Image 1 (cartoon, rainbow, N blue to C red):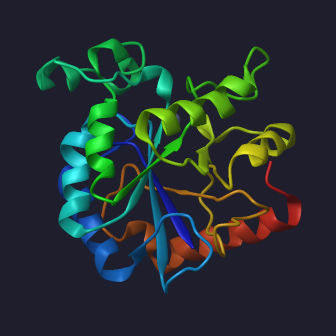
Image 2: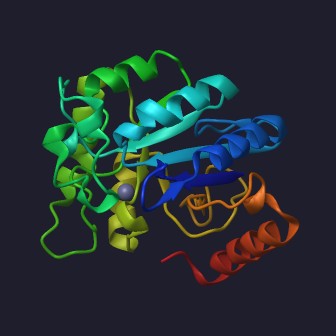
Length: 241
Ligand SMILES: [Zn+2]
């Protein structure tokens, strides 16, 4: 099971060029079946995950997912999500990647109103990416807030069940993973490997970095897939963390 990770389209960092991204989604729609985390998988499953929930997800990415009927997870951080906003698009989309978190009050992230609207399409599943996007290995982290409160807030605000967690910066250790497992069925990291199913590799789902694509099918080439399979095999032997 392939899982892919994305952030922006047409931004300055962690981003894809709009035309390449659209061609990539078209390729995905023709060659894979997009799925949310579950036990029974179709042939050629792929799980697309968009991190952080920036406003360009609503304006640029979601319309393309609808066009190609592709399902995707959107991993969000409740600390930065506003209920709704009357800030203009020109302001919301004006910040560079590195300034988006500190300017969240200008609605640089999708609002709850926008998340609710997207959920209605049944193409989006909103999952937790922690409460405040902190590295969970740092000493002063409130794990309960990052893991449990983030889930509770999203479930209450959106009327959904949250079963998946995406580690901020892909960072975790065995202690964090054990704690995560108490509250979530599925955990995602970064790592450029493929998974047999949603148990992932040693119970963590690896995602392939799909930002900065140069062509539509780049990550699916024979040589890339061979590399991703070998990585999964080596991680199975030596462990995840
Ligand atoms: Zn993130």
